[in-house]
Length: 272
Image (cartoon, rainbow, N blue to C red; front, side, top):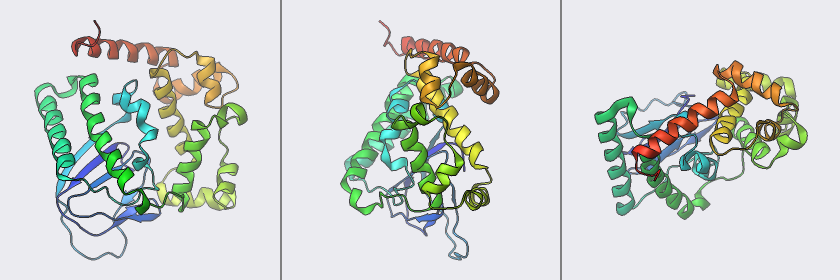
């Protein structure tokens, strides 16, 4: 679990790799897309020596909270475990991806960590839009129903927050997640830890913090609305949880983030 997003433009095909508790296959010249909470690695017992070649774009969700990339993130379905084969792009789309990567590379070499977030988000959006076009063309190739334990866990959390279930039923419960996967709670927790090295509650907390940052950065919704939408009964419980995980209160995070985004928008010539 790398903790960041990756888009990989492959120059060559190779053996499939571990993707959650299933496999991911890819082809020469295709695009691999991975997200922060996904388990990725070599398949055990696969003895074919392979030296991968290609180009990788990696980024943290934290960089783009409050931008279109963050707002659209869960609409890009190719970030899901259910999309377990690479995306095929045509020559025109490949040109867009390479050109966009070149522009990002030039910005990073010129400015390093001071790169403009707003401009970077616009360029990254171009790449993600190309990936979405490719995904829609070949959607029949994917198994869109969650199958493995990690895929079902991912799907459960995605739908739980996106469909407003947290506001109605409270914080996600491990027992309910286990039942949704058709497993005993004890076995589910043990199996999840064996696969990821994380307890289920730790995984839920990571997911909730990322969701909270998205919502705090995307508008002026009150803390009571945001905390209820995440399953907290009282806003102060949410504030305590957020500060324990990030070192700052939700209000401090929001103000710092809005200040940062405003500076970057002004620099990009968008605040007129």
